[in-house]
Structure formats: structure tokens, C-alpha cells
Length: 170
Image (tube, rainbow, N blue to C red):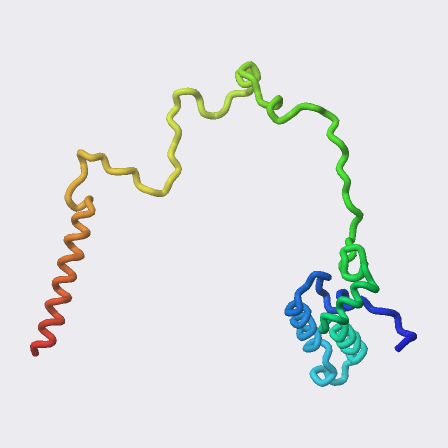
């Protein structure tokens, strides 16, 4: 066991360094189902299961985990192992202008010089909704008001009560 290289338990289990104990346990259980020799006979998964068990042994105990973190300060960080970035950091160049957002606003002359839009001044915009236009107050009838719906609900309720009472009497 002394000849084997030290494995990063965070990379083996696929968890971040700040993972909770529950996240570590869930990752270990998921990998145990994937690599357990009893569940996969005939496949050579024993080495993978051994690595999962070693990682679990280190990360399952708070004391062993703290000791491993002290002795391997870069383990499980984005700059090592499984969590290593695939690309270098992008450092954008410094802006080459000192104009602020307020100085980018257009002036009245720039607005007048802009090409005209499809809608001309004074043109009434077309409303693109699916809702029917509201009924003008002069055209409203009793049926269009909310009182008609209330009256219909009361009639249905009265019919329901009458049928229940008639069912009890018979």
C-alpha cells in the first residue's frame, strides 16, 4: 500500500472540497452501485471499488478528512485533479475608451438623423393580443356583467339543495 500513489479522494468520489458529509455519502453510494463486484460479476471493477472505498475511508471521518486536508491543501480544488479547468483563465483587455454609459446616449440630432422606422408618426399601432377588445359601456347588457354569472350560480345551488332535500324526504 505504501507503493501506491496517493489518490485524491475528492476526485475519486467526484465531489467538491467543501462537500457536506451527506454529499460525500451519496457520491460513495452511487459509485458503489456502479463498481461493486457482486453487482457486476465478470467485469474487472475491483480496482475501482478499492479506490472508492479508500476515498470513503478518508472522507467519512471528520478527523481523517481534516488531517487529509491539512496534509494536501490543494486537493479537491479547481486547480487539481478531477476539478481542474479545461481552459486557462480569460483576462479581458482593459477598455480603450473613457466614455461612460451616459455619454453613449443619443442626442436629438442623432435621433433625427436615424433612419425612419416602419411605423410613421400618427399611425395607430396594431394591438397584437388574443384577448377580445373590451365591450363599450353603452353596448353592455346584463348577460355581459358579473351579476348574470352570480345569478346562474345561485340558481344551480338552489337546484342542488332542492334535490338533496327531496332525496332525504323520500
